[in-house]
Length: 162
Image (tube, rainbow, N blue to C red):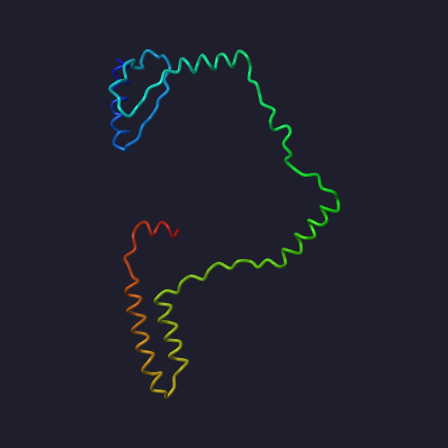
């Protein structure tokens, strides 16, 4: 019974893997539930682990031979006291010259631009007719530009902001 269930699982997995245009290799031991004939599978290749098990048993019986390649690799240089002092002095002086990066200012929103224009209108109250005519035109342009940038928020946008 378990062999037939395992065979059904293999055929299901083969079809799922085939839908994704993938190939899979499975290493199986010699359990009696594992199917012996897997030639009908197109996207799943079954490999018997008996060869791998015997190779691991051989290595385990003989012990593991470690390579000593890393023993001669220099991982750190030996510095004199003068070198250490010079390095520390150079690091301290270079910290003063480095400017901290300021994060970029966020792009102003349409309501904040209209509010700034209203503030400018209140500041520039004058009898100048040219200024009085230019400010409403600019406000209309900002409102239209803001309307073009508006879009309905999605559920994904809500969770990204949090």
